[in-house]
Image (spheres, one colour):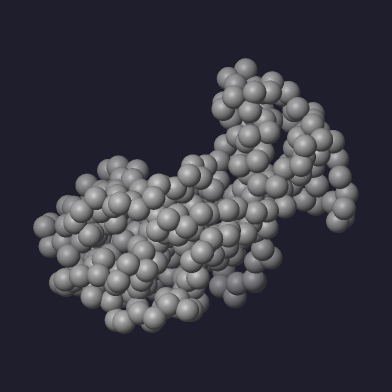
Length: 353
């Protein structure tokens, strides 16, 4: 299976969709990991822009993944152990402790979410107003000391005030020390509502992480990606966002060569960390025409690992935002309008008052 992210950023406690049953049954709690040497061009034929006439881009903007067999056979384990470019690691490092089927199913949803966020971030950078619509805030994770709520509960009101998005929930709780939530129980029959009273913890946090339910992003950019069916994970975001900006600014963002990018991008343009950067760097090293490998600045030591692996064959550029990545590629300061929506896609509701 091909993945575009490494160690999971969010340890989701339950599947986002019903997982498909797997035919393989690995007996050992390990995974066999290797670089995926195929770069995935994102700004060419995989990107559709209905209504926008565009020629062939002057350079390729590519995503890069790694391959992992989460239920490896004995032969696969042995072949990875003798391959210096591969590794055998604890399965939990990749799945966050979740069952394999659940992890792979969640990866599909993460990929779609990432594409939507990346397109919205590109639209905002290009000056298009971005609006988020939803049907409440789904609880993705809870602190152990947060009583009365469960993962997958949907918060639809705070003290009688309707909540449509995760951002609305954060605003509704700002300045309060306690609140009564109207909650649609995730495991209850449709239409079953509950009232739950919650209070801030002594450290000032509410202790819940939420994401907008049934999220729809409205903006003026129509861009659609066609991706390989075996690809999982959220770190396609940076390559996708750069490809959209490239398409709507004349196709010269990667002029002069091949650019590879990995990283999550939320709808505000913030670039988030991903894992397996060393394996991705090994894949980049196999392609002599790559001139830049753009990675998240948040990834820290992994950035140094990428530079060590590439050894000067390609420039490793660490960025914190989509605007910064565009500035690096185009060679001058980006003059587009700033994004006004500043809340990340997934967030702990905590100390903002």
